[in-house]
Image 1 (tube, rainbow, N blue to C red):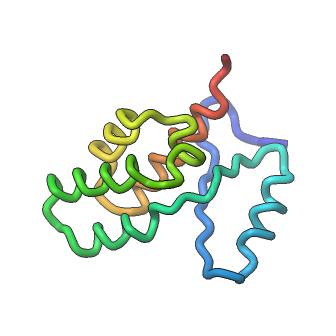
Image 2 (image 1 turned 45 degrees about the vertical axis):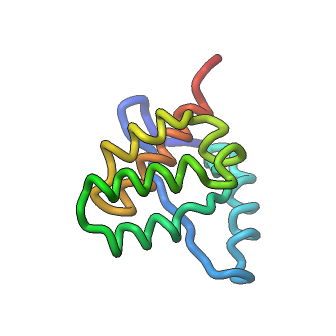
Image 3 (image 1 turned 180 degrees about the horizontal axis):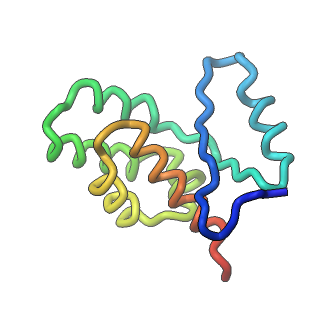
Length: 118
């Protein structure tokens, strides 16, 4: 049972792992819980981490991050299933101080859109 009230923000965590390390099994176990939202695996984390490490000027970094995310081969089955390209660009523009901030903003927006009443 979720103990979050309407005024609290649910706890978010991100699972990272190497191939064959058990992350798929862990994801399946977590997904079985009714109060846990588990988005599809994305392919943008490593390229985005590289950009954060190498590009320190905010303007080109935002442009590169937006391009990588919006043009990801998995976009339509991951973040793009619930967020438009414009949504992604806006999120990057407002949350590109560090990788953790960006991932949290993208995944939180994805989760909110998944659970928006029709």
